[in-house]
Length: 215
View 1 (tube, rainbow, N blue to C red):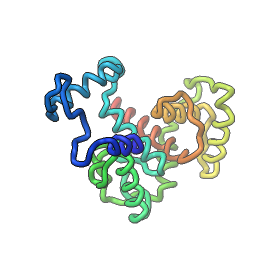
View 2 (view 1 turned 135 degrees about the horizontal axis):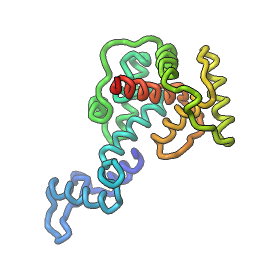
View 3 (view 1 turned 90 degrees about the vertical axis):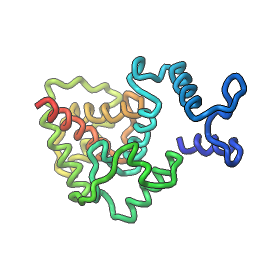
């Protein structure tokens, strides 16, 4: 998304707004007219709350969450708290995430995934595996779907990782959580290569949140 934004800026004359400068009948377009046209273009593509359950801004917000996960940060909108990283490292990564969204201020990102709390959290690894362990109680293995053969090696690799931290998970539990994480990226199954624990924790927190709402 950041690359697309930079490309658009490169072809827009300096000082001109990022939008349609003219209406379809050749008149200078206002911000309100640009918004109306943008929504019409999104409807034409099928990206509406009614048809697909999403909006353009919602997809952008999800990209910001997914991008944070890919760079080792659990965003507040998914249950992340302050203290995940050393202060300077956290600020460096947040600045990079902001730039990927076409911004230059960290504070702007609060509109996408809320603000981090000021309180510090336990050690990141301890926090992740505690949340995952709590969510396992909501995933009884007898009610989970079978694992496709192509996914089994990946699930076994994740189980080996979890075992290092004394987290006992069945392959079906792992498959369920990682499938949920993969669907955030628009695919049924994503190769587990980086920030695996963080992806699992994000879905664990989602399950725990859903459980609280149903109580």
